[in-house]
Image (cartoon, rainbow, N blue to C red; front, side, top):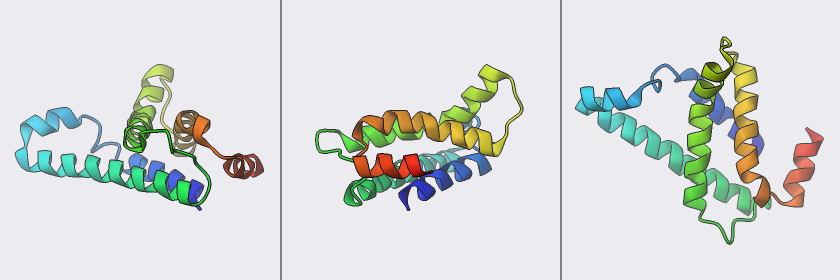
Amino acid sequence: MVVERFLRTFDTLWDFRYLLRDPLSALHADPKFSKRITHAYASVENNTLHRLNQACDEGLLTLASVDATALAKNCVVIGRYWMDYARIRDGNLQNKDTDKIQAARQVYLILQPYLTSKALSMIDAN
């Protein structure tokens, strides 16, 4: 299911949060790492775009009038930085489940205008 795959993305972000903490400094310090982190970000963006297109194919999103690539980028930015933002803003220790759900809610707000009635009924069921 698309929703489960979507939430697993946040598990990955959580697991690698320390490696992703300050990628700009790492880009300048190590050219080999720079290529890897650039590739990793491109992979996450492409995977997100694939999942958005998959959700369209499954009748969960309607993106006909939207730049899906730009939407995927926005989802990645919000999903990637939400955990850091919440920690800084709230001053709380991180909690994987809470942070994952909060990040998913933020991305949900971006996708909400494009959700079909099928998707909304699935969300209401959970």
